[in-house]
Image 1 (cartoon, one colour):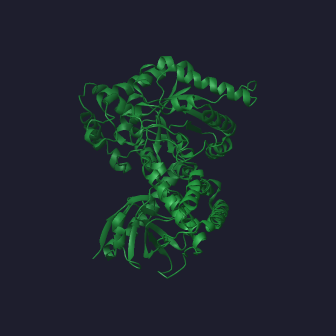
Image 2 (cartoon, rainbow, N blue to C red):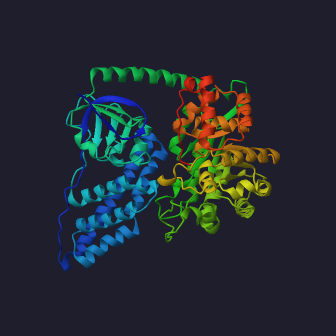
Image 3 (cartoon, rainbow, N blue to C red):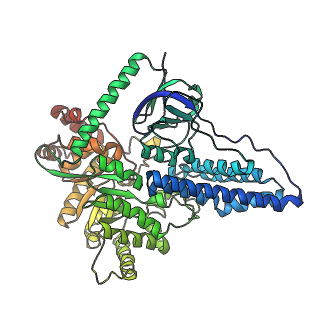
Length: 590
């Protein structure tokens, strides 16, 4: 009889194979003390192991760059930063010198302290680096204890295997090959971990976050893995295996359809042209966005360069990242959002006391304007990258025209520093409308802005006074609340009046009903999460703008979001649009 478990789909694809349980753990490090006369030799042992670990990381980075590309290779930079982290080094030295501990025990204790600090962070990008810390721990301790790295080549589990482990260290992930590793299942981890990014680049399906159920998956068992839904079936029945094979055939057919449609324009049934762009987290996402037919990038989150970092990212590092994305979309817009840090996203180089209400505190453009070095590096990198294509800057969390004016002043300084004043080259600057203040003052922002992007997530929580992550008020948080729908309408009118290009990049752009309403209100450009992009494009092709405009005009007196949603869902049923497209309501993270 089959058993079914649930995890988090992290790398898409369905596979059927045999389990290979993988364990790479250092046995408990003994509590060994040393004499005062041995302190210097233990310090030398630690430094030698640290240098060996760094050399191995550099070697892995080079191998990964050759195999997958330079940005995939950059996943190992965070490990090099960790091994060189002054606190990690100083803490280990202190344990050796002051507590007379052996180097391996001293390092182990300091790593535990480091891990606790990371676990205290509320932000997923910091937690995503836990496997890297685990990799660093294993690497340094393997050197100190003279232990070999694990092998992916035996014992035999069939011609190819599905790796099942507590987690997969990035140093092991880069050694996976699709012909030998069919899929990956882990107890912990997240969609944004470096190991998962490598698995995606290799085209290997992955499910993470299975938790304690992992212990119930035996070595050698047959398993069905769905890297999209996170579903696992252990010892599937014959009928379930037949269903898997049919699903694979359907998936291949659907990919062919999407590939054929990817190059076609996204037009409604009545001939209205729309633009559907991608929300991306990192340069890794570009390949998938192109495959799905993204018409550019409407939201390129730059936080991946700073979250979990102890130093401001260099201009050159940013320039390479931005240029790679711009060059991937020749003739298409790439909208780079400046660092949206603060709130729950503080990099380690910002030592900030806890705020009572961080979402209303020091964040986004406020941080950038207060930290000239941070902002200057990003602006210079962006302006340089814009020479390779159509790069635009999007400023988040704007509440006043002064913030845009000051941003323009910083850009003027950058143009001068790059000797670009006479060339006349200027990078378009846009405002992310996600505060009521920005929405109500479009006329004041217009002289400083070239375009507007509607951020529905934050706007919803600020307008409705409902934290989008608070379970108790989840029923209040509704981007289709009548007040918000009226605001969307007014923003479209204001942007048209001031000739500002308008798009939407919040979660409403991945919601079929939301897209239909926005189309009826005059929106023609959407930036969508990768998970929903193809389906939203297909949905739009089955909608009529004329009919949607009429629906919006007839229902201006609705009293609630659910009432509005029901009207458009009824329209979907009548038109068959939702059934034809196969779209399901989805959400992005912005």
